Image (cartoon, rainbow, N blue to C red; front, side, top):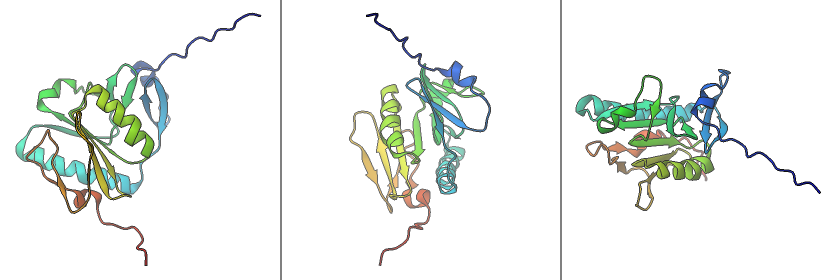
Length: 188
């Protein structure tokens, strides 16, 4: 009986990603595997815009770095290319910003929940493995922000609390402002 061998599947990298067809779909590569990222909802976009505006206003007044929003490629490593919802790169890390993408580890990353398992587990673990200083998961449905920092226990923050990212300690973000009005149906 002959033993059949299978060639190991090659992990995808940024060069593969850059050759994906421009077909209107958003892609990410996680551990060498390609995933289609669905278009965000309008509520999702509202949260991104509110948070990025808070950060941008602070940076305009105090400096300290740059804030970006998706879609923007973040090449974390050879087989991990993400498009985080909000990306902050401190001045000290500015060398990772190119004219077309970010190549390296951002200072602070935020994802608004669209796929709970991918955002809370897979992306969190990947960001922590690469050394992202802070990762926030904003969950408009559960009305909370989960904060992950290397070497620290997760922090869950709900309105009416405020949050300050470590990279911008002078910035105080009102969680209620970021989440927006609570439009969930009320139980009687």
